[in-house]
Length: 63
Image (cartoon, rainbow, N blue to C red; front, side, top):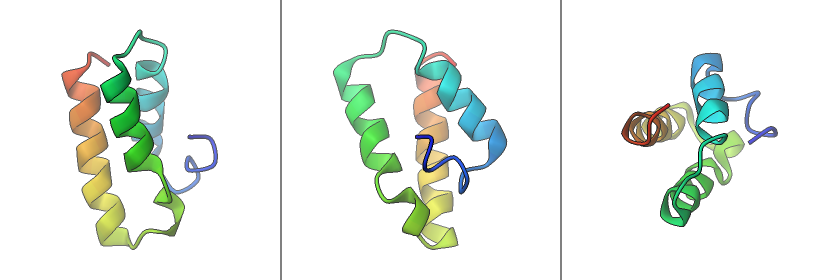
């Protein structure tokens, strides 16, 4: 996540960082990993789509 933080909106990064302090199901961790994988090489459109998915995971899991 640290490597991807430079490409990620600050508010999303801080929410995600807070979420990772919670005890998460392995499925959620796997989903986040998949969303962050190669995040830095995505187009702006692809990155925005992932941002929406990341925000949904954050909202669904309590951060």
